[in-house]
Length: 129
Image (cartoon, rainbow, N blue to C red):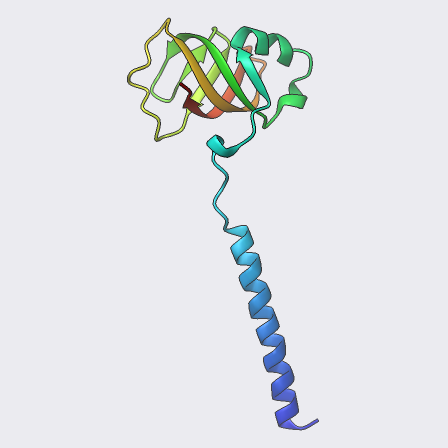
């Protein structure tokens, strides 16, 4: 095999590897989908959702819900709805206007159920109007 033919084969292989690496990089580095663009799997009151989730928590993992409920507690990262649903807000959400015992409607993703605290956890929460 001549040097020229060997060089062209190596160059072709390197180009294919470079194109493949670029495609994989572009796919892997896509920005995550925002909570606003995700499809809602449940809409309703926090009490109704708590009753629904007691049936099978694993079926609701990573699902997006829109809940309406009374704020029973708040901290710097989130709020508690109906004494049993902790909602952690995104960093860009202004939570200073939220008061305790206020009715609120929010959208968030179910991340799990804390058996120790008997509390459902939501993250990426945003306030809905």
